[in-house]
Picture 1 (tube, rainbow over the protein chains, first blue to last red):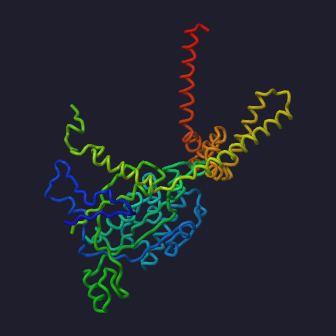
Picture 2: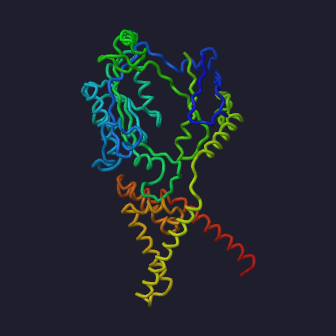
Picture 3: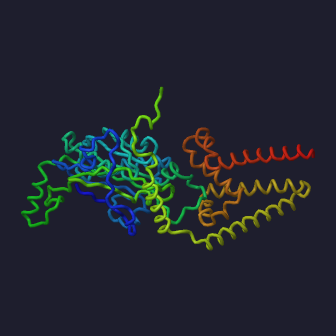
Length: 268
Length: 172
């Protein structure tokens, strides 16, 4: 069993590198919970395409060049929540288009957002008319959707899955902090919620990962899960479901510090 | 007979996580505090001071204008009308999206009781307008200023009781 603790930032050596998890009472010590934290897929699903919608503020950022669509924050919608719903729909449509499938070909939409009862996702799914499963992991919703979706596809239940998420600065501020026009000062370290939506289309992996790798080797390409050639796509080969790590940050403006501690125990 | 969670023995680890976790959290919080940028104190105080001061000067000008225009009303009514005017200006500035910028720039300087209170109420009302006039705006009017009202009522009542006690003891 390999213990690996992933840190972000420097001067964090005070955190112990390997913290063995104490099993809860009644939980078997033999069936190591750590061993189950990472799953490896026998039929690694393919990532066909991704679609994104953001506003200018995100497009000006360091990864701005990778976004597909840039829209206005309110986008002619009646309110910001409606704008968020539209962004999510646009992201799903754009991803489906790039993947070469119709929205109706999506077998299941795995989506989440930051609002009460996953409002944006549910309304977007209503209008898209595809089967829907709501997920919530705050900022990790997209990773969660990819992990859960990959498990479904690995088991062979679906052909095409859409993993999506959306957030909107204006709706999140209202949900978690103050009204937009309230003249409160933000601390200089305060983070901003992204105004944007993203969607990734996953497809059942046809053929084992080895075929992609064999093709890569044949062309003297470095061995990689990314594959090679027109029919190869990035694949999800494994997923690690994280534990909740709470380092006691209770400042609503400092989301980064609350999320920075990541404690993943990776066991092959 | 209902059992408590502790009796069930479901959690060996205490909910707070024990001493080691507490110590780790304290060290992490100290680290976060050490690396987080802080506001420039002198600059913030300066901006707060001059914006607050200018607000007061403007209010005084309004007071003098009202006093000159309606000399028969008396100083108390002049003050009340000035408060109304200042509240009105703060609400209008909130409505056109300027007050939050002033607030971010000036901090406590923009937070003078009257203007800050007006801004807090107006911004709440605007924020929840999309949920309807009654169930949205009117319900959430006091979502930010609620604590101010609660404290105002509670401490006024406390002060009243102290006053009553003091006066009845000395028989004034």
